[in-house]
Length: 374
Image (cartoon, rainbow, N blue to C red):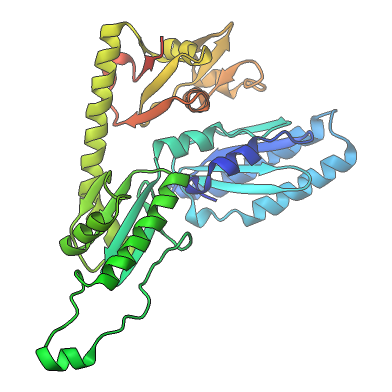
């Protein structure tokens, strides 16, 4: 599964308590050569570490060890590193397993607990904020789900949509030479209203930025007869893309997505400036972390590739080096390689907005900043 599959319902299910042991395994992976050559070796090593942890845990009964290791082996056999992204997350219990590929780097870790470790999934989805792409023509509409550079056609919830067979007055056509106008006749308007209704229902259930693609006549008529697209993040006035392919659609969308990202960066910069004036502003990892722990953040802005390994001591964070991470049992002693992901998950759980900005945007604020509720 991919970050786009992490719906609110899926996250609730993943976070549900499970009988001990619930195993979470995370591993950084690579999309391209030559770096991806190391992935199979690293996967074997972390699987071996997981088996060692299972065997060494006195709280795991013998049969549970056997069942969990068998489930882990089954999950490992299903991992396809040929289609790896930047991170791999594997969850397993004695009765189930799940495999997630993420477009965001994760630390290498094995955790045994009574819940799954979801912070890396949540942060990946927040960083690569999903979006919708509606491609419309007078006789067909398709919907695409996007995460980062990945686009997949959405084939449910009323999509793809096509009008019912149109009837035309042949005698009238012969008499006056009239032809049905693709963008004027009532049947087309009726069709586009159904598209608008289906889209509105979907946006209500799964709100995301929406990009609208189509010829000016189709886009204009859809906006005339409906309201679901009025707040679109961007419009691409180009035809011939209603059936994709995803590669061409992605290329056409790139300028619109870049413009929207720039608008978002300007909006966030304005909010941070206002917060400084009101003295409801926090900057730096330790300060933002403390505010998030106190449920005081309303918005967190963080640079896209900001990662920091820290030691959590008495509620404060202190940066540590690679040698601390390599120590056996470092995670249990408070070392957190994914503290930014942990902070992002905590902020989102409190209903805060989290925005990832290009690297270098927040240099003056130690790469992370927040607007506080008070």
